[in-house]
Image (cartoon, rainbow, N blue to C red):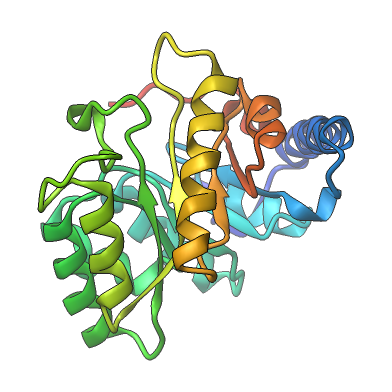
Length: 248
């Protein structure tokens, strides 16, 4: 017999509390080093492969934002969490296929991985049909210009994957709200260099779209670098929840 999602083992709750304390301390220290207020940075707990009970436990510890990568897992988990009357803010942060958008818009408060005009169009249609408010969207940026790994390409006029065309498509979509940008530091890049490039792009974006204030950057291994370069949201998984279970 398995525990229900609302039943969190005391030992697991203690593990999560300890991980959360360590991550919060790192974020506070990084903010202090960067001369920023701690309130400027939101931690997103990335709970992919972890059970709904962990989300419920984290919410009880004061975590307000949760990130998921795969719709099949996220949709079921969000339903379980909602059944326990827990209401975190859900961020979809994985690569999103157009055939999944109708599901994602039902539970996600923000989609951080929008990188193609065709995806913008599909999200807009789905969000308009399923929601009574706009869906917050971040444009994912390919910092190194390699669209094959995901991300809109800066300085490209490609009508589908160019950063400018994606931004303007989101800004024009009535069902979506352009909230900012997201990026992952490319392999082989120093994180400060990657996030500095993202920061410059974010600043230029805000000049044209002042509401686009979110910069989602940094994960367990490089959140300090991201905060030093102005990240407003950091996405933390293993440092908070421990080593991930093996995916089947």
